[in-house]
Image (tube, one colour):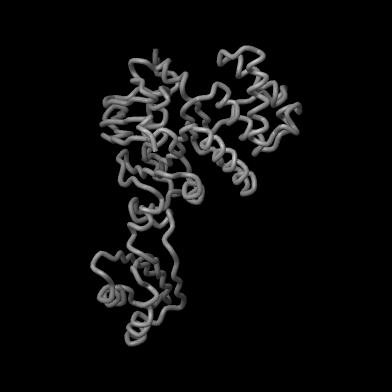
Length: 332
């Protein structure tokens, strides 16, 4: 991994007395596939828009591709691509024409724009439909074309805000292949997503943000290993007294092991769950509290997220900060 291409130090973004981002610091290495995860209202989209010079920070230092975002925003914009959730395409033009126009707007000559459009259409698997009007494209095809448009000027960094939202599983995986290829060609990718499977499949580094603060950062494997081993889930009948049961189970666990009780379910971690299960089942039998179901699995990123944040990434925190439209804040 190369030197940092994004450096954030003590970044703060406030709207009046409310904080959307509260003193965060992190780096992204050049060539990385970086995932930024958090529930709604956590500050991830605010942070991404600040990095892309679409929103002014309240305080802190941010450098993107070596440029200070406040002193040299135009230089930052020349080095990045930004694909937002909303797709902006001309429906009454072909995919090829859409890319050609974007290329010219990015400063390419007509000849360069035609050549680059052809390269990208091949890369995202749209060569066969390049001359069809975009209004005939499926949602997945439109998303791939939109991403190709952000790469017309060969940006060093690509920001993606929920790029596969609303796509079916097949279209999502097709888009994953294109993103992997972009990254292999040297583009640093900064991704926000609500799909944990997507983050696990694509990202080499992850940062989890909640209530405007980064709560953990690392590789997907390191974050999952941090849970302390296998994840055991026990489902009990509604009449079972789980307070007594959970206390007894805790005696069998390692000191650092996690245990949580929710509804009629107990979830716990153990470094060697298979070896511990016979003792656990015997203990529950002695208590007269045999579970109605039991499962053991490797922890997932969703498990990591719930442990760190206390809720699923899809739960709506709705602690969203309202403020001026970030696209009209008057950045020079």
